[in-house]
Length: 349
Image (cartoon, rainbow, N blue to C red):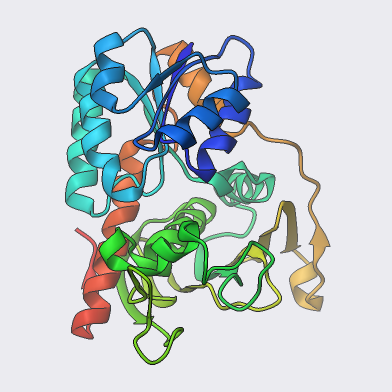
């Protein structure tokens, strides 16, 4: 498979390294509007051709698939151009900045017959995959309550760098630079993780969003107005009647990058955790429920999203996480934003 890397910012390095490690995948081109960044990226990953735009790359056209790692607001126009040219697409999350655009992309890729998948990174965790398997096998019975959280701490610590001086962080805090805040950036991950692990779809959501004053008195640093939400809390109803709570924040001091999911069923419970690269799964099942005894569940490695995408292209059939899955998750986020603004529960339609 001949692959084009579209956008060469920080996350693009993960794409390049992971795809280059798969037998039969060749990185043949890179695209970026910043020539210096593109040149450095192409040199680091031994990529021969460089293009200033997706249009120029498509004029050349000698590639099979695109890894779309552009900024969020550019996902829709660039992906639509690649779809029209008959390319398979591996898109960074979110698929688009709203559900309407995401569904337009979904319908286009499905009509084209090409593979379209989205990089929900934390599906690479064996804990969530094993939890989903156990829930599907009836290990905890019908789910009644769900708790989910995603904690990052880069607004209160410097483990990942200095957000006050680095554009790669500042844009995530500014709606004028395309950010939907913590809800859109990390909330999307935990909603996917939650509904994947539970095997359930969200039907109703109520949400509150909070933006903290981080740079008084103007709450602005240079060109970046810091108006995107920093924390998001949601209560949800699922399609089976279960209820859930979910929150995402960038102010979780002491937690670098942690997703946690607790599933409480009629006959048992599961807790899946991904914590800065480490996955764990615990279960309280059967007679252990009577003594509240939790036991570790052994985990086996699982294919990454990158590997699944390559396999899907070779088979000519999309695997999960698909564009349609990402569009449906975006519906939940859009409804949460409306709920926060209007102060009332929203149905997911």
